Amino acid sequence: MTAGQEGRRQHPRLGLDELIHSPVRLSIMATLATAGETDFRFLRETLQISDSLLSKHAAQLEASGYVNVVKGFVGKRASTWYTLTDEGRAAFDRYRRTLAEILGESDGPANTPAQKGTSHDA
Image (cartoon, rainbow, N blue to C red; front, side, top):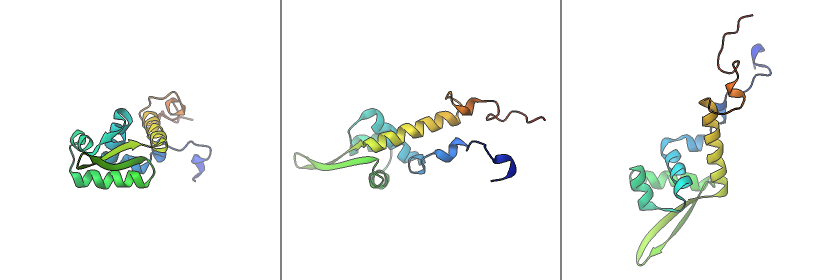
């Protein structure tokens, strides 16, 4: 920490969850947050991505504990359903709050003039 940084608040971008921050994973999380339980086909078509890309990113979210994946059958056809876990919903809510803070949409410390880059005339 340099001399002028002591007592200075950390920039909110440093709090962004890197796992969610990927555009595809962010899109998966946002879709599940609003749609609830979603099947593979709906998610793939909604996000306009390939099967392999959805599978890869969903597996990363599942491994992190953010997404629950259930595989089963509808008739004789295999199907996969996705839902956010409680941990995933909490992580997504934190991510949204952090973005709002970065964009200056929160009522927190990021809206103070010292945080917005006003001049430092002494």
